[in-house]
Length: 358
Image (tube, rainbow, N blue to C red; front, side, top):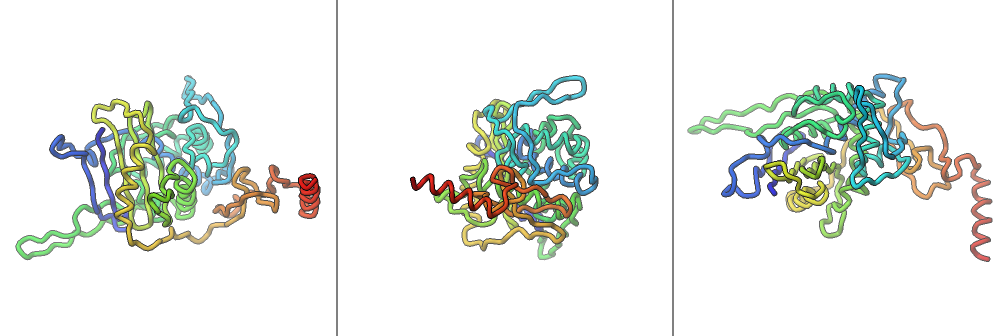
């Protein structure tokens, strides 16, 4: 298998390092810039961004990180044809919030989000990003079934660090020729999405690393405890393995696969993430923990992570979720006694404790 890696400063666009292949002696092909492959699930964050943008534009749509979709085998309409995708390893989790759907990289949940937002909305957002091949407004767009190179995916992901604006990449900062120095000016930021909706996605991508498909980042072996976000990617038949992970000051894209497009039989978490971890453990050593800045204009609500509803004292676990004003949930958690007053919940707990003691 071959590998490509590019590391950038997402704020400035400066290219800090790249690896075009596993061995230059074996092959001089620069896979960072010339290898266009399907990005797979690394595209999913842009589906959620399109959904939150649609919510901000159109009050008839209300898609938030706490919205619940049912993760189950589903047939979608693609024109006059049926499209029946499946999740990785055919695993389904039933009702789950969009945050959990993205953390676990569930295909069905993501396609349902694209359907609710409008496939054309997702395609238009990717067109604005302006990298890779055009994406068709069909259900499979949610699974990244177009092509992009690692350097193009790195460019696209800069918007998540820059409040919804793309930072064009800069390979050269200055040219020194016989003592004459010419400064190469960085290109301006290109606005794509709102800072508020972008932060909602970044906040969700933290869960990919904290408890999702890239949870091994938090293993004691690596001790990467700083604020991070990222997304694994695996394409059909496991032909391509991706991982894109970033902090506010370093963004690294890793692709692993065969040049002839044969399946490698490994997921993004199995093949690309270990390369990313080995690199970032060294690259980030000694760096301070810089938090992703939250923009103004968001509403923060404590919710139950299972139901996406307002947390109650009975909820065993709660999280603080970011919402666009007016999109917050209003129902109290029904799974953990949402309709029971606090006093009633305490009485129920007392009766349960008595049974345990007996």
